[in-house]
Length: 271
Image (cartoon, rainbow, N blue to C red; front, side, top):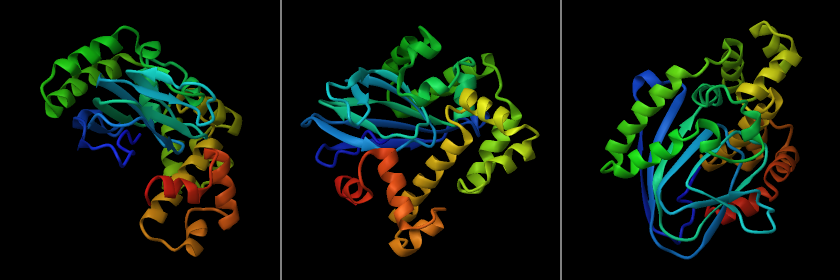
């Protein structure tokens, strides 16, 4: 999740990898700080991973882009895979860390809580790991600088992952198959390859990933299209390279999954 997506508000971020023992489930750490500035809201496209946001200063407001009233405020929140956009807003200085991890790793980290709950929207981290969420925020706030905070994350995540139930190996294999095919692998074929029927694969994906395999494939293709577009691939080639039937198919999917057009999104993002 890009907390720094508001171009008129200065800020800084520091990326780091987790301890080797936490890979490949835990993907990345990022420390961030945004200075005081005018209220800023931006659209996050559907996420291809689970993000934990732990703030040591300020708060983030999150919710559906079409929320008529105020967005919900959070200081420690989990955002999962979803097939819809997410509005992110901050109204003052914010600082903290973000942890990006695979959904099946999040399933273990959260003690086996079904990730389908995260597919419906962000959840306070306390709903998933209890009072350990507040304790983790306190330890992060006491740490001096990003390296010390990342070390706190290494220790805490290792403890949570050791205590939680492992994901089902067929879920992990199917997840990797979807990514290896850029979201193009037929779902019946994936189910056959991992030794499950399609309905069983779908049920376990909802539990341990948060979406069905079809929903995951849609997100993977959409994010792949954005990556290729930002990499300079011409629009005429983009749709086919990202696994869409044509440009119209890509446009419809983007509008369906974000509530806006691709052109408007890129213009707002400053692309």
